[in-house]
Length: 339
Image (cartoon, rainbow, N blue to C red; front, side):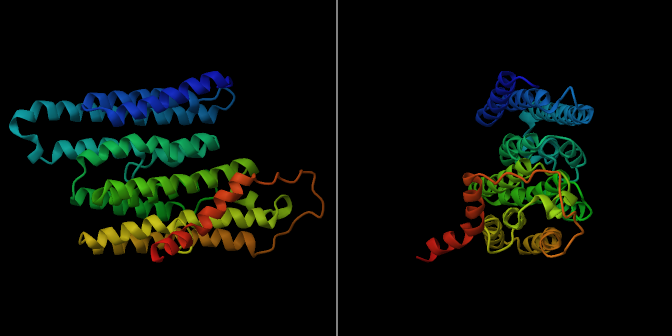
């Protein structure tokens, strides 16, 4: 994938697949859009020079093809049972939901997600965490039901997102587990209102984009690279960890705003127990984000008094401004509410 024109072609077909899937009025149109999306993303994942990337693209293909097959089978089941009133039956709806949850990597169908993320480039990671979730989640909103099945999916996603990231050294896998945790929140917001999900998704995409662009610009892939401050100014480190804590949902930052709204809407819909469990589990995620931030900013490390490596470029003005938005976003929106 060296040629930019081919990248542009696959990117445009990737977007076209998602749009086709969202705007389709039949299940087969949805399936076709998801297939176009998948077949456009595979060449973007593959890289002739890196065998690990090729392996991750094959993993991604097998999992997504299995999910697509399952979706198609569920659609056929629905079509066959339609005269008998399939709406009253739970199994076809659950099968469609399961295939879509496998596509987005929600727990307990999450095993492929950190593996694929761990060997991809930062831009592919960003696409996987944001754009690739749009179509399946929009389709999931058509058939989502208030059920024990969904309750289990939400809670298990947040548990795995919290516990999976505790022992991680790879930044890409850390963001993958963070994404699984956010998926739990997004699915719960989808059960209440589609508008809340849209707002959550936009803010989550913005915060993920800030983190990925910072890591890409600094060429960081593992935690120990952050800790060696020889090559990084404290201001850049500070920006990075403000964004990380915002992604985790620490109250003064923008990342807390969608969680706040989801919490309020869940309480209004008599789902207080689920909301309490979700908040308690998300505290684990925040714990390891804060542990990383404190250890990188406060603890002193043994470093060379000289370095052969050039110092990193300063982050661009736009990136600095988006970090400011993620830091001050909640305060400014709160002020607008009270004015």
